Amino acid sequence: MRGNLMLEMNSKAWIILLAAIAVKADPTCTHQGTDIVCTNEISDYILKRGLVSEHSSITGITLRNCRITHIELESFHKLPALEYLDLSVNKISRLELGVLDGFKKTIVLNISHNRLTEFPLGVFDQKPNLEILDLKGNRLENLELGVFDPLHKLRHLDLSSNKIKGRSQNPYIFDQSTQIKFMDFSRNDMSGTPENMLAAFEVIDFLNLDRCSLSEVPKFATRSNLRTMKHLLLSTNEITKLDNPAVFSYLENLEKLNLVANYITEVHQDVFKPLKKAQEILLSHNKMVNIPETLFQNMRYLTNIDLSNNFLENVPVNAFRGTKLKVLNLSNNRFTYLQDNFNLELRNSGVKLSHLFFQNNPWQCACLNDILVEIKKYEIHYNGDKYDGRRPVCVTNEFACKRQPSFNEFYSDLYDNVI
Image (tube, rainbow, N blue to C red; front, side):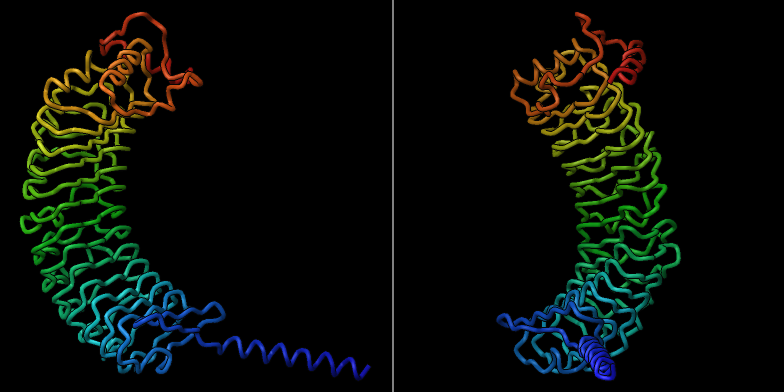
């Protein structure tokens, strides 16, 4: 009995000892050329001096997913050549002032997917060469005025998926950030953001405002100093109309405009006219019932238009004249017919489609047949798998296509009840 008790006690002691060893286990680090890559799947870890410090020739350190909870001062001591530091996917909730000092050559700093709520003023003071700063997926709420001021070379800043409220930010937070080309605010609440918050930007190329609780196109994203911008994402917001023809008046160099998944019902006929270099305009998953007769007319660089998943019943050929349209998506709308000789009329105006998508509409069968004949004649790519004869794709077998708006409601109702 006593022997069994001793054996049980010894077993428990070993378990406790093994647990203690596991708790204290350091990440495993390997050298890969001039890089250090560390892994840790055992336990939470406090980063200390000695694990990756004191390496004069190391240019890159990866501590991704190492279960780091805290970084002690001098953890990155004597790393004069360090250019790349990845601290992503850890549990860091705070960066102490001075913890990032001592390695001034760093170009890329990734602290994404941690638990940071703020930065102390001065934390980036020793990062004069930093160009890429990734802070997405943290819990940042307030950006301290001056925190980005030392980063005169910063060109890529990702603040997506935080808890930032634009209306609460100091309008001068980016006052020294003149060289930013890539800016990502997505999945934050940027409604009410001060109009001049991005006033210092001089070379912006990409601005992401996806899922930012915007009820209108924000003025801070369409200022005159942002005329270098080429890609603007306004998707998955609450924008209901584009009724101001001057809203994009300063964005003459914009190439891609994404307005997917809003609530847009009203579009002014001239709203896109200032976008002289636009190549792609995405308007899918909105609430549009019709589009103006000349909406995209004479936009000579425009090659891709997505109007899918709206409530459109008619799309005028005139809307695309003077473009270089190659891809047009009309799927998942309320079309029962297209204009007679739709593709021929486009070709006569100089538009030669390479792709036309039109599935999941309440087509009259005769009207759909007209489209398919043209599609095959001009060798235009379409969703052929939707028209393989295995599923219904139109609502009536009448001989002639009835191209009168008065019939639309009847065929749409029939489609809803049958397909």
